[in-house]
Length: 362
Image (cartoon, rainbow, N blue to C red; front, side, top):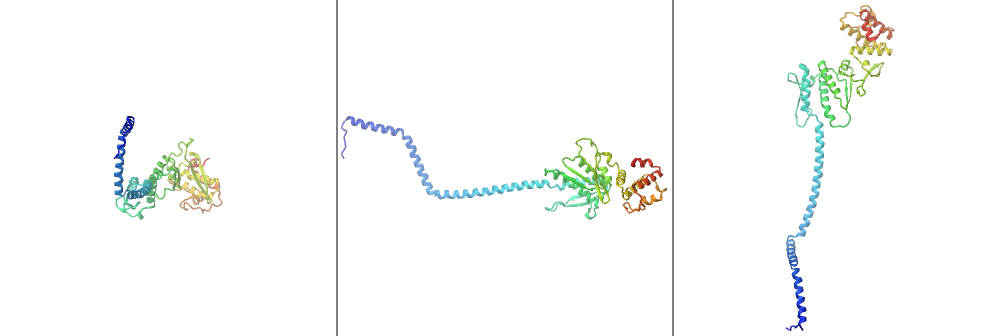
């Protein structure tokens, strides 16, 4: 082996300085070199582990399963959203459904006011079926529905409708229009009072509703319109009354604009009918209300014979000689003026001319 000797001191100094600088530089980067070496060793170990684990295959399988999981989650979320929506709709429908047990209690409380003639409803629970009831008589015995009178069926339907009205309105932002078409159908006095009181209560708490009550029953009309005309002079008065008056198969609709134009009693209503028919020159149609006027006066004042001084009047007006709605009576050429003259004479013969003048006018 042949060694090259330095040619002199300067050469030796140059080699030394170079080694010194390189060593100094290496010393400064030693920590960094060590750190990088450790990192490379770790990465090498990781690489070996991944290779042994089949990392690429496993990663591809994970990505595939993640994609499937994402799709399933989206499907689940869609189904949960649908379920949530359906539950919300179900809650709305359930809220609209009348609580039948509460309805029974409420209706039975009102029916109990009918005394010995009352009956009650009992809710029958039969699986998912709703709206089934048993009818119990006042003695607690079950009654067949066919034993209920028209009036009894009517009152149950009426009370159910009233009870359900507020619930139905909770779920609609539309203005409610309520129509009662002759609610007084085949009911006795006690039931009439119950219906009238519930209608008065409804009118008093009218809220934003429009309520129409149609009736042929003067007695019912006079009672249900209790305090009807109170505050009628105020601008915000919101009640309105129409009378329908029939003549010759036609009907005239008359707006009643003040309490003076309205009926005070059913007896007064008869006089009002006569006046209207008189104004229309309908003597044949005047006979029916005139018979009822004379019969009412006769019964109220216990008069045995109102027509003692006029045989023709007895033939025309005596309700025992005609059906109350008999329109075929022979007037013998009499017009409306002749009829009222005869009625005036009848009242005069019975010392009641002041009574006649009060209702008909002097």
